Length: 243
Image (cartoon, rainbow, N blue to C red; front, side, top):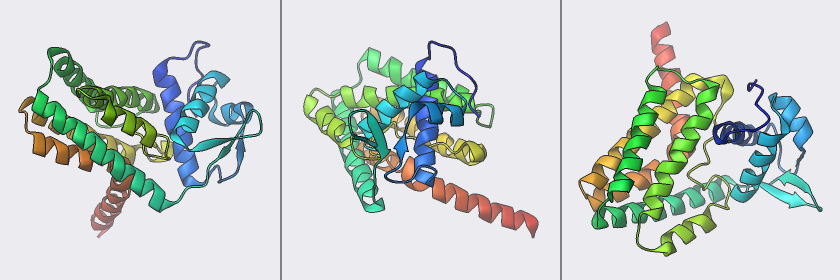
């Protein structure tokens, strides 16, 4: 259960609730067409209504929830093909943004922000395991990293295209789903994402445009494809240990 929050919720707490709800929708705990309300959800998660309200707003923007009636929200029906297509589009657009940023060169502020994201991410994961409190902190770092890359180009066209694509389910770079019952696996997923961030920063600083574009395209698949690969590898390792 997520710890009870203060009356004034911080961004990391709200992002943690978003990540948990996103995972529950993926797992089918909330089925397509099911109506969600603040009080039942807040009671189920053990949090106050404020982060749930903020999470609903975020998930609606992502396309996971849609309005019904005047104030109600229901889980949107989505297909695996739609999710994959949206992620591919984001990877292509973020790759283009990263390539243009590498060609243009990082400003001092951009370099400092990206380095800080990588440094703070490394500190968060340095203990070798993941805590529930880490979910929101990682989400905030991840959003800052991606926003800095996308907004670092000299054109609003890419950012606007990504913003439109972000309204599709799981298309946003912030669409991280965390399974609270499998934090060791989730740690491995975030560790890989952290490695990608470090590699992207290195390529940007070296102004390697083709390399950074490829890295950003691959990075888009961390939340979509890597989770199952990590779980499969863990099962294989466990089976070998039992032999």
